[in-house]
Image (cartoon, rainbow, N blue to C red):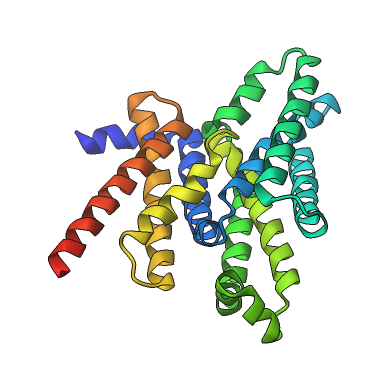
Length: 277
């Protein structure tokens, strides 16, 4: 019975693209999420994702049929502005993030209210529409997966040192500022391209929940990376399959699978801790 149910799913081109997108973006978000959570940048990534709403609105307002490029460009502007404000003002980071998030969302809503006929497209960006992903999006996701993963692993030691002890990394000659800017740019690309998978509202969950679950199963950073990638892959693919069989929205299904894995990892970690003690 399971085989007969899965054959139609795999023969549908839109499901093939959805599964391939999940295979690319799920592990990538989980990998980036290890460093996002360690550097306490979850709210930072959430601000970028909500800022992407204005990028989408500007794209439609300017006449783009696909607002991906305006969305990425505006998100990069938001990310650069956040970093500049953190470095050049005395405002607290959470204050800066809250101001930029609310301001960018307000601007996006104002632009959207002046547009007609884009409600369906806007909803797909808000809540995700992985089933509408095209082959061009997949190529971009694959390039991003390979390039970001390669960049993280060749700089793993330096990035770990910058994350844990930025002052020590600077004294050791590590280009801390350059690494921080490169990481922010990579994070912005990952967040904006994951919006099709989960939507603006839910995209941060795939960056946060798998690494958080992996912490319950890991004793060092390398184990956390491996577990996080595995959990992100399981959640994204499982969510796509679940959305097909239960006829449910894909983004929320991925988040629900993430939460189930988080609870299971937490319980297993607690039981293992009690057994070992």
